[in-house]
Picture 1: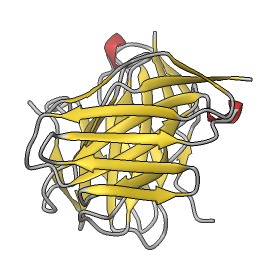
Picture 2: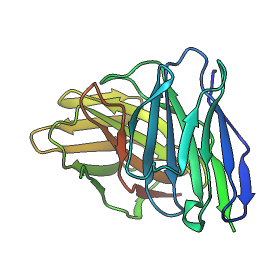
Picture 3: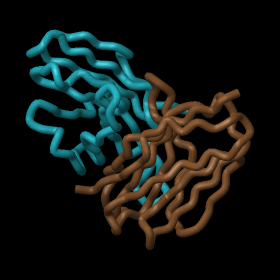
Picture 4: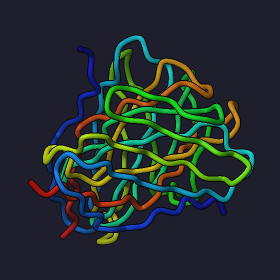
Length: 115
Length: 112
């Protein structure tokens, strides 16, 4: 069964460093998303991406964040200068379309720890 | 600010019983409603979605939607210990928007 894959599964970085989280969405999907979940808190939407551009973003997704689809398969989330409060589980998701009856499929997540 | 509210639990039910999980949402324009299951340290896993008023059944799971009351629920029949997890209610707005808003989740414990 096709799945969304994320690498690495766990990333430890020092405060102020740049990190890139990588995702390979399901191959025929068109919409890509990043969500995050701080430990013990709810899953929060960060950004959606379609047709090589951001289609929607939340207030969390500030100038420190960027997304890119550098080739036909990868979808990346970059955090330019990490802060302690960026420590969270980051989930990539993809969906074949958007609409009422279209669900997003989640990857297994990257646990980011900023020290 | 669109809100999705869930009782955090834990909700404890004996094995074989029916577990009832509830969710309310604030945005009357919400169109699609999802139930995800999340095991500790794992990613959300879709159980089912619903977008029409009424009931939708899939195996042991039944989702119920009442848009007038802005209420959605999930019933799990014949609960099993493997159903023990956090259940996330998620809501999506009009078809033009992809953002899904999650609730904080209800922790379910099925006691053998």
